[in-house]
Each structure stands twice: as structure tokens, then as C-alpha cells.
Length: 391
Image (cartoon, rainbow, N blue to C red; front, side, top):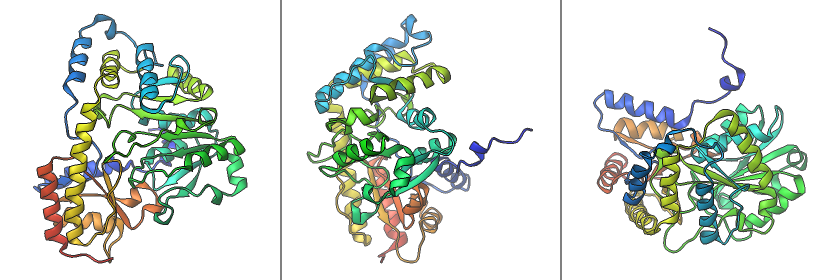
């Protein structure tokens, strides 16, 4: 068989694929595994969205190839949602493109603007697809450390000017996966100034922008004056409407970047199934009470986890957004050894922080996307296994 292309050889194994393999291995050994590893909402997709999908699936026109850019009705729904949610106006015809989930667009944007040897600024720890897309495009990764002393925001002033001049793309993600950090006032303004100075495309991953608690409303990058001149934002119906398996998202913003991404997509995919687009429209245009309800579920689980983990020894500031907790590993463990210890001794899966980059060392991530009963059982097992921890 012919040799594997170097671009694929250079890819690390995808983090969640390894977790799924580990879960299957333990299950085959008879272990009753509870996974706190993957951020996949456990609640069902709201009924009104499913009803629209069922109706549209029988419409004959929807059985044909869709537009790779997305139906204008879908792109208009995204634009209307931005206007209502953020007061941001985007042209659905040329500033919105549909995606087969935001992950697809995040992976492909580097193919659009990065030539071999070009630099991409990638947050560390961060969603692995930022680095993966860069590697596939032949780009060089310059890591931006996200440190607790900086509230998990990159220090743009620490990026060497020669590196910034070589950079083509800056990836950002707030609310953040894996740290659950949120941006501070003024940070996005700094990003716009930085991108203008060095002619960099900002790619803001806003997958968790509607998963927030207690009145906190995460901002869109596009709210900032001048943001559309330098950047785009990725979004998805996956998290707010429990639609991860439906694979439907978008990119919005800079007209040139959207056109180029759409041009690439027209050559490699045939778009999102139209019945799914209609279902997403029902979510975006319908009552958002379902979003508020599910956020209430996550807040309850967050509080449950914080109380139990506090008894074990973790002192955690309540998160404002996402359904993740980012925690230090106890004394005597690495990220990997702690994750292995928990699955071996407790049958509980957590995600080692190093799966998100070198600066994730010494941390692990918990996802709250499992039932209250399973979460309670997992926390009970952690307490029984760990007792009282120190750091």
C-alpha cells in the first residue's frame, strides 16, 4: 500500500477518538463506565425542531443536492438571529455560509488562507481542530498560552512582532473550551487592533455563546466596531438546541473570507441536508425558552459538581458559561496518570488537559452533559476513590 501523506502522518490522534476507544475497552472488560469526557448534550433535541425536520424530510425537493453555501432561508435565519441576539447586521447573501457543523469550517478555514510554512496563532489549551486544520494545510503553529493568571486570555503583546507579521490566522474561542473562561470587556477591541496592525484573519469559535448562567450574556466578536473588517465567527445549533448529531452550523462576518470558505466548500462537499437546515431555522426563529431551560439544567449540574468537588478538596470559582469544569490534578499525578487512575479505580472517564495542548498539563476537564443521576454517581465514585486531595 502507498505511503500515508505527511500531512496526515503529522496529525496527532484525535483526542475524543482515543477517549471513545478507552471507554469501549473498559466496557469490554465489564467495567460500568461513566464518562465525564465528551461534551455531547444528553438532553433530546426540542420537539418543535424535530417536528419541522419530520415534516421537511418528506418534501421531495429536499431529497436533492443542497447548495454548498446553504439555503438563503437558512442564512437569513442566521442573520436574523445575529440581529436579535447581538444587534449585529450581516448580509445573508454574502456574509453567511452554512457549515456541516462548525468543526468542518474551523478545519477548512486554514486551507483557504494558509500556505505551507505560514504561521497560525493557536490558543493552548484549545480545541484540537485549530491545530489539526493548520497541520493539514501545511502551516506552522505558534501557541498562545492560556494561563490562569491571565484569566485564560492570550497576551497579544507577548507575540513577537516577526511572528505576528508571518501569521495568517488567529483562532479564539470564548466562552472557552476547555477552560470555561469568558472574555473580559475590551479584549475583543484589542484583538481588532492587533489584527489590523498585522493583517491577520481572526476566527472566533462561538460554539458555546448561548450556554451561560445567571444573567451572563457572552458577547459576539462581531459586536466590536471593525470586527467584520478583520474576522469571522463560527457558530452552530449543536450546543444550544442539543443538535450535535445533526451537523449544522455557520460562519459569518468578513465578506471576502466567507466567499473564499464557500468557494472551497463548493469543491469538496455538497452542503447540509435541507431538512436539517429547516430544522435549524425552527430552532433559530422559534422560542428560546428551550435554551433557557437547558441552561438551567447545566447550572444545576454545575452547582452539584462544585459542591461535591469542594468536599474532596477543589476550590473552584463558579463558571459563567459552557458545560465544562477545568480542574487541577491532585498532587502526585500528571494529567494522563490521573485520568488513567480514575478510569481504573472508579470507572469514571475525564479528559486529560494535555489533549488540548502542552499548557493543559496538570489539568483535566469534566463535562456536565450526562444525566443528574449519572453525574451524582460519578461524583460519589470520585469521592470514594480520592477521599481528600491536596495540590
